[in-house]
Each structure stands twice: as structure tokens, then as C-alpha cells.
Length: 293
Image 1 (cartoon, rainbow, N blue to C red):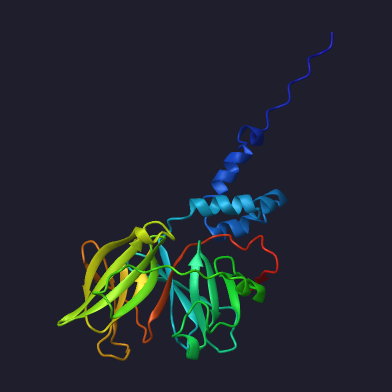
Image 2 (cartoon, rainbow, N blue to C red; image 1 turned 180 degrees about the vertical axis):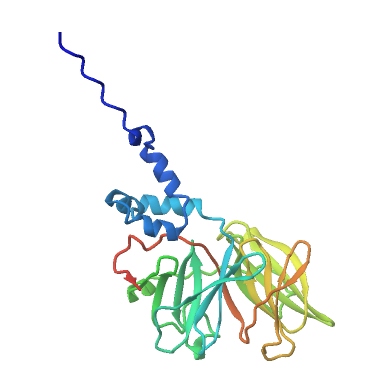
């Protein structure tokens, strides 16, 4: 009578095996720095982490990081961008721009999902229009993965411009700043008063629909005030100048438009800042003609 063959032992690794969809879900919630290292674990992980679908999923899960990035409009000595907490502007880290411009000055055009757009800043044309004039080279840059690419000149030649009427508010006529607040087009208008200034904030509820302009609030500010922009959470950042010209004694203040509460930040900069929302992401990881540094 033949002896019964013993059953092979159940391997422990099979018992603890996780399905691929769970592994991908865990990976999609990890910080960028960890994901860059995990590309080296195995070949399948490399292709998954660098795939467009995974990059898109990771972006959706990392929307609320609460970071803001800023740099002075003019600073020949220090062309670094500073990352700060959106609610307090307390500094977190700094990024040194890995490319240079013909003028020697970089201008932060804006950001989208953490991908930064920078261009050459020519002083003589900066007061005309910071978006379309005075630019030479334009770069997309993702500092969280240390990659960037230069946009071809044809991208700028294909831009289409459109005119949108501004809110009909003749009482505020001493200055206008087009900006955005909570991902909606916004307009800050100023009016000089006997003992200060008023800042009227308008928001376009539906983009492109002129009738949707809505007056959000009116914020009292001091006379020598420079408008900087809004944070992701809707706070207004202004530069309170001690005199008409900028100096290191100027204060950068966050104002809550709803409660009018003010919070002084620790920012020190002579020239007005350019700010943009920031978040770590994997954009450009799978892109062509991308330069690593």
C-alpha cells in the first residue's frame, strides 16, 4: 500500500498577499518622496507609478495639502521660491530655480495642481501685462520630483484672448487687481477714503458669464497697501507699507474677508510678492522632453 504524500505547506507569503488594487490604493496615498523611491522596488511598480492613470489618481487624493508658494517680484540676489503653510504663511521649505533667464529675473506666472509656470521677467514691460508681455522663455516646473521642461514658442502663439466686462461699480476707481479666489475669477477694487482705503472684492460665480459677478465683501485697509492675492482658503494677503516706497519695515498681513480678523505673517521682502497655491504631485513624471536635475 502506497504511503500518502504529505500536503505541501501553505506559503506564508501567499497567506499575506494583498490584491493589486489594494496595493495601488495604498501607494496612491503616499507622499511623492516615498513613491520616487518605491519605483525601484520592482519593475511592475515602476510602470504603475509612472503611468498617467496613477498620476491622476494620486493628484485627486492629495488636493488638500494646504501649501502656498511665493517669491518676490524683483530680487537679483535670491531667486528662490519659498513654500509656506497656506493659513499662517509660516515657512516650510525652499526651492532653488534650476534654470536661468536672459534677463536674470524669473517671474512666477502661476500654478496648477502644484505644477509651476515661470517665465522671463522684463522690467520695462512688467507694468503692461504680466501674462502676455515681457516674456521670453516659459518653463513648466515640478520641484517635488525635480523635473522641468521648456515650452515651445508655438504654445504662446496659439493663445486666444477674450474680453470680459468688469462689474459696474463706479465708486471703487482707485485701482483694480484681477485675481482668483477659491478657484473662481475675482476682482479686487480699491477706493481712497479720508482715513484709509476700502477694498471691494467681486467674484464671478460662473466663469465667462458677466451677469454672475457678485460683490463678496468690502474690506477696510490702510492707505499704503499693496494687494498680493488670495490663499486657497480665501484669506486676503496684503502688504502694508510704512511709506509710499517699499522697505523691509513693511508688514505682510492675512485678512479673513468674513470676520475681518488680521494676522501678521513673518514674511520679510522689500518688493511685493507673487503667490500661488502649491502641492506635491507627480506631474511631468511621464512627460516627454523633460529635464531632470
